[in-house]
Length: 315
Image (cartoon, rainbow, N blue to C red; front, side, top):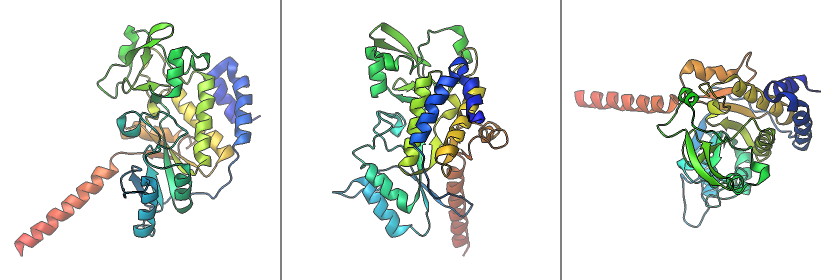
């Protein structure tokens, strides 16, 4: 038995730990992935782009992107973060309809896998929430028992006032289900339905998706909005111990299946909270995502242009 994994499952799922452990081990056996290690340094350059940032008539954008990179920047850029390239319904791709499909307007999995042969790829795992247009949520609304516990039903109560809000939108929205109207947890919007990680079935489904991404060529997996993953009534529902334990568990699982894959947490919080996702003794994410770099780069260019302009004016 892998004690590290089992102890985390015991912490999260108590009496269900043994059952979910056995299912998890079976899943891990199906996804043994062997590939070259990735060792990022300060010399690496990562391009962040949407799949359709570069277009050419008659070509799928992912194909065009690949050609553009090879023709113009292959000797400069070695890693590409393709922002969510899945079918989506809102929020610029961060409301995913199907985690395992490539948006057909962009291309297909073959395009992604071809890119992965020339570049290290970063995928977004948008796993705090899923689109209300997803099959999962549609089936939940229909009363399909498989998805009964995938989402969080929560009546409005006083304790919800403690919950940290990233957006000025309602925390709960009402949806019509087979069993009548239900209040459902929605951290970000009415279209982005939070997932319930207290469900072991949901947990296993998400693990399988992360392993699927590794198999499809992801060398870096960015865990979007991960700080909100676990919900406990009466708390802030951000940076909870259960959330950190879950990320550590993802790390343990990937170390057994795809040890070359780097986990990156995205939390968009103050620095001290952000770096807490390295974990205790760096047993959590290998890297943490920070939003300060892009504006600092732009600021540097801007300041440089001002200096050049000033020198020109004085001469």
